Length: 329
Figure (cartoon, helix red, strand yellow):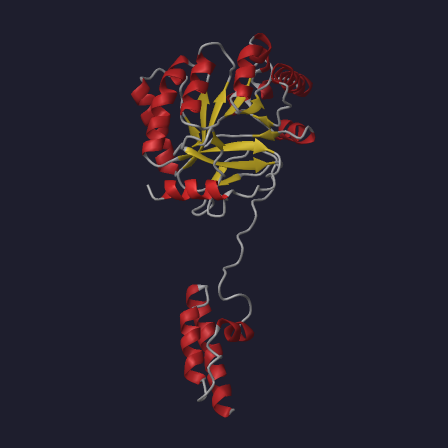
């Protein structure tokens, strides 16, 4: 007994020294220390259960990461390695005995029903488009997205949706997420509070009328916001979305220059929310090459949706076989 108590005392000193030097418990050292204090015939003191009885907390799992706090101002993204690790594989749907197409660029879906930053894994990107819908240009963007099987977030100007409801409907039918961007794209802080809020409400109403969807995501024109307007959005259940990478597609640039600029921003940050404009002809021309580049460099396009995740459906045997076949390619 005396030998065992001495060994446990030594173990305590070892554990304290480990915490002081590294901030984490060295479970290998703890295992070794326990084995050295065993008496002949005692074989269980080196098990995880035995260690758990001596030290406080779990030896196998680190403390859970702190949740992303709620906020009022526009959300951004945080890049955290492994953020996508627990995402369930999406089941494969079969039509006429053939698997649906495989889209390497298509990533997961993040659901959000409160104003808080989103957590992305490295090389995850959220594609957002402002100022539409407009004929020719918005459909070109949709066509490129559909060719790669990915979805974006479209912040529609109410006035544009009012005059081009048929284009707004194309965005809906394509499965994109709908957001709003005021009615007439003013610099909101320059207006009176009443006029600014009125423009926000009118824009949301116009987009809902054109699309049949009540938008919950909002982007400030010129990214100009203040606390009073942020609070007004919160009262309306709207989530303001900021940006992490500005394409600056409103500036003169070739397609190659525009794609390089966006990729440089993403590579520097590791991923994030990208601002583009489906109003811009250069964006309509560059979106296809951009998606090709993202796919070639191993990025995943994440869709942002309002609400809570649906209950997962059981995956069929055929879906599992098809997914496993893809994973070994």
